[in-house]
Length: 228
Image (tube, rainbow, N blue to C red; front, top):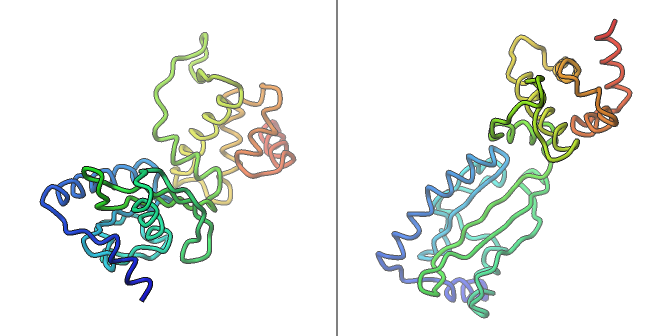
């Protein structure tokens, strides 16, 4: 009974303007999911029928929720808190995917003239390998100017940024090369970085090892193989 009473508190008689506002968020849902990639689930909720609040969801393989699904307990609490305070803050917390993997979630209440009409939730799976995360974002790197005469060197704010960007780009190049077996991709990533001169930078072996989740000894081994 308590749960039903809480749902009735947040339930809204939607106007045509409310519906139009929520509809305008559907493209944003697609955009957010496209930017962050397949490990980011984005859900849009309407308060017209809180028991079946989800009106759009992308990358739902993480939580297995579907259109027509109910609000989560966290989502309900976010909306109840808004009803009490009237403050449109972000709610950030950690939850779990359907398979138990950790997810970081941010939610924000969608309003119209101070009234809550919906909820936008973004869930990011925190268990993905770092190299895969970098690979996804390397698609969005802006073109950069060459340093001196070396067109393979990238402009970066720091050595860490340069190596981060170089590893991300190399991961993308190698991971999409179907001629390289999966079990050898890390080796060819290291080969490519060596050819670009990345390992001439002091401390680069340790930084590359951290990015690829390999030991520094594995990196040294690949470099020795290449030299021989």
